[in-house]
Amino acid sequence: MAKIRIKQIKSSIGVKPSQRATLKSLGLRKINDVVEKDDRPSVRGMIRKISHLIEHES
Image (tube, rainbow, N blue to C red; front, side):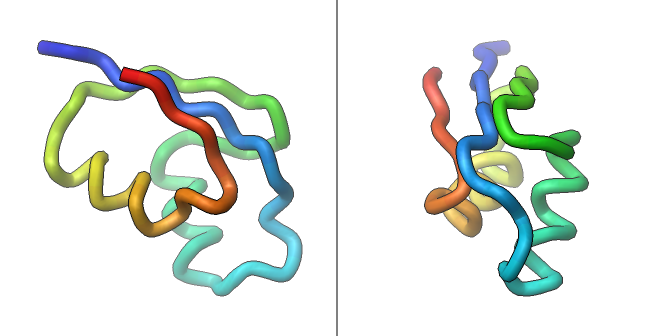
């Protein structure tokens, strides 16, 4: 399965609690953290929800 590389570029301070929970569920804690996830619709939805806090590449 294809992988998506996700990098946190902005802080979670001041964002909605649901967006902070999405960052946590993706495994992102700090700025410049990078994780690789399977390319699934659920992960794509999470990326869309917090797109202003992250960068991603397929």
